[in-house]
Image 1 (cartoon, rainbow, N blue to C red):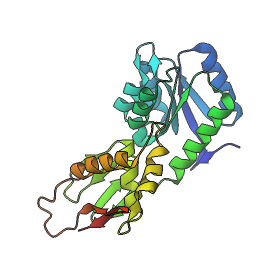
Image 2 (tube, one colour):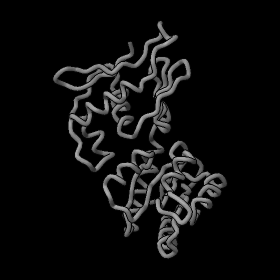
Image 3 (cartoon, one colour):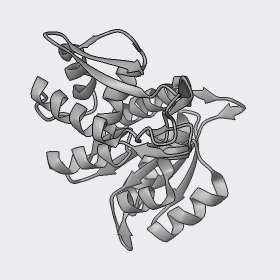
Image 4 (tube, rainbow, N blue to C red):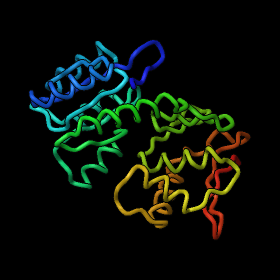
Length: 237
């Protein structure tokens, strides 16, 4: 079943320099009903990205003229499209870094075409259902950009792990979210061992990143409170 977006079938930019794999993936995804554009190098990726504005980028990391992950960051792909990295590197630290850098998913070679198509459907579905922003009083949480914007225009950017926790708190504003739930939130984005200590460390980083209240004395700002023996709660104070 093809996933259809707004005004038609989803389009995919496939960035892959291995000829046989590129042909296999393109043919299979086209048989699934997607429009597939291809690029072999970072330079071609940049051109196709600007010309085609795809719904999803399927990107190899090790390309002949550069790093696909760095190119995706430079082009800010994740601000406008879904992003799945495909690479032969299975190192866990590398995988986690790719997800923190904005990847929605990470697939290692050799690629199982049916699994890849399932991941494409899942990522596109999540992107389509994801709200673009959440309003917190006069503040705004930008979901795609992973940013918190203050009424004064100041912004704070977060890693995927940090933003996942902040989003979980914002979705239950005024109510405590247990550490167990927050551990599950991070675990969905990472295959490394996640503990309550991981949650506490990320919460400390989030608190430091929230823009100060300078010039906003009468405007409530988001504050993360620790609920002893339970978890954390986001309040507007």
